Image (tube, rainbow over all chains, first blue to last red; front, side, top):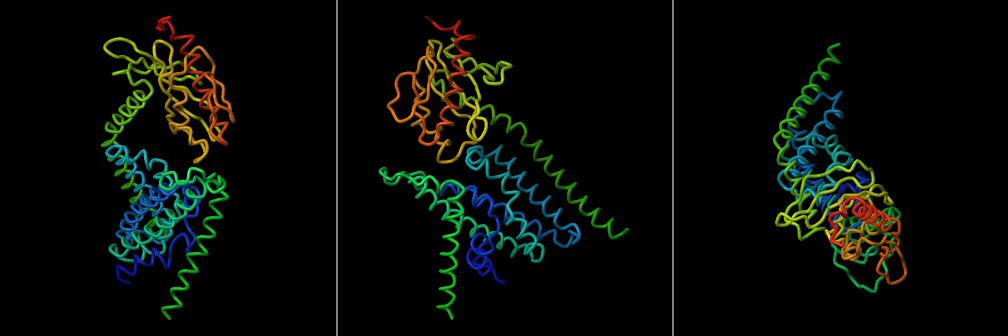
Amino acid sequence: MNILKTIKNGIINENPIFIQVIGMCPTLGVTTSAINGIGMGLATTFVLIGSNLVISLLRKFIPDKVRIPAFVVVIASFVTLIQFLLQAYLPDLNSALGLYIPLIVVNCIILARAEAFASKNNPIIASFDGLGMGLGFTMALTVIGAVREIIGSGSIFGFQLASAYQPMLIMIMPPGAFLTLAFLMVGFNVLKNKNKKSIQ
Amino acid sequence: MKNILKPGIRLFIICAISVLLLSVVSEMTKDVIKQQEIDAKAAAMKIVLPDATSFSDKTETGQSDVTAVYEAIDNGKTVGYVIESNSKGFGGAVNIMVGVSSDGVIEGVNILSHTETPGLGAKAVEPKFIDQYKGKKVDKTLVVVKGKVPEDSEIEAITASTITSRAVTTGVNNAVAYFNSNLSGGVTQ
């Protein structure tokens, strides 16, 4: 599997949100605005690339019987390390992303890619799988966040849209998350299948 | 036996190396992080009392609602106090800093931390809400109102977030009450 195909796979064919339907907790929880979506997505992408790389490098060393605990230790350590470094050397970025960093440890996507891909492929392709999945995740989160923010807060990236618009508050609460996710998932799959049909 | 020992040992090695790495980075960054926290605190205090150039060390009050006081100093003179207080919001504790000048005027309120709902209670940090406290005198208890233009001792609630609005106001009132009973020895009447 070459590199471009791997990246495209993570964004479209096996998009973690719209196709694999994993990582639902952060997807539903932090997409109250577009900027939140981007922030969480990019932070997760960074961790994904790193953890995929490390786990792929260790894939011959980690015994099959204890692979899950081993993966979790690697992922949690990686995230904690990043948190220390952010707190110390990039404090502004840390306060912008602060809440999301610990949440990344419990993101299914990271463990899923470690198990399904990183532990079975070489480090280079594993890193790019991390990149592709991360980008697909970020794209999905940003779109969901944007939709919820526009309808639920009347703004986009913090910029107020029509000031006469009375926002539909339910969109920035949990029910709105489920609704937005459902409709976008349908839309994504319809577009993806339409594309497939026209290629055939 | 070997089936259990080999995976066990390898897992142990992975954990040991992770812990080693983490403790090294933790030690390395410990002091820098401490300094960041001090700087952030000072910056936060300057928001609520802009006239001050330096702040004293923290004085713990031993209370649970008003937790700490810092003296704000400019040119060797005390210009006011920064008072930390916390109250119960909708989603958890709301921690605020209130800057009160020596002549009994609220110079600013800053929300240090909260877990209020985004888009609703979380709007309390926006100037539209939080700036309402600026300029209020310490001689009155503030009350939250909705649906009307707020008067001098009134704070207009955030739409659909009355609980959060009340929580912040309670925190401010508690800080002001503490100022009036403990610190207004410095108030010039």
